Image 1 (tube, rainbow, N blue to C red):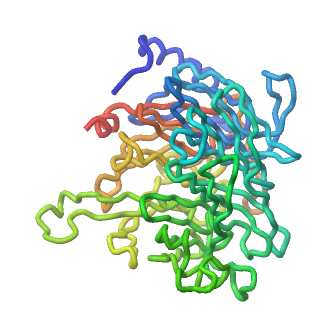
Image 2 (image 1 turned 90 degrees about the horizontal axis):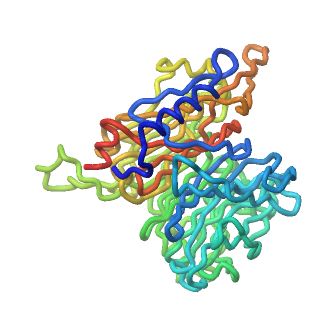
Length: 483
């Protein structure tokens, strides 16, 4: 595996020492724990509660964009207290991240959890040589920034203002931007729809001139529907790959997973009078397959793993190579005050009939995680579908159990091959839970989202203000990437 620094042994000792000196023990925190991983670099991100890290290649530089939860912190670069927005960090040298700028949330909003970046050279109708950031702006809107000069971002325009549900709820959430087509799958609230999060699809091939394509959700969520609302809180996120779009609903309860024909989703039924209407027929038209999850599990992410050869099936004439969907249900209750959440693998070789074939869990007893404080359970897998991770390892954030690397080469037999749990620091925030009527608060790491890059690095963003951790694999886990 490539190295990004000449004196790796010395750097390892310096970082390990820094981590140890920052670590807290007992009821006030915990130290670093790792298996087949090594800490490469870290940054406190101005102690802002972090959601989504996104590494981007911009010329010869590697820039990390980090979306943050609501809140506010002092920005030492400006001397002002700013509402949380987007951190921009140069990680070209991952052992020495450089904080370039903070883009505060705008117009009274707080937080900008979601970030996507496309190069203008890839987008069909954008200016060449530019880079564009698509982000949420609190729960108010989605917007585009020009980040060609990462340290000097420039606002381009608002893409969509959020509406409200009949009960007054207003949300934004995770976006997926197809850089090669410009189609952006935004998640947020539209006026009158019965769930706070629906899919709002835009043509962003020219980021300065967005065009709304349609609004979408499960039949029964549309404004004129009645009865129970399917899919819990609504769409959590979309993942687009080839001619399919995979939707996860419900986040942590009453979830569903949907496989959609992308062309049917974008164009609708050509024989219908209103192909893209918010009607039961129009909403059902793109669906190829669907799985409804138990009431105590939700759909946070549905990540496709397609064309996987199963070694043990090599002599079978049919379906020795298969398609799968990796699904995560998000933990939301501190100190295990909820049902246990898991990740599960669906066999979607027959897309109309998805079948659960495996689960992965972190045993609570392996670290006494219910007693550590904060959330224990899965949150989100990596989004990258590039080498060297894709099809080999899936990295999943697990809140107080850090980041877990799962061998997915045989989806029927999932195996953990590495993990990394950062040490808490003096800036790590506590998390509270009421247990038998008594509120207990503890300091614990809360690894929120993870992402990977083509250098073999893993980026961990912490929800409890501990910042950014950059990790590489070692041992057997590193060997899997290299083979």
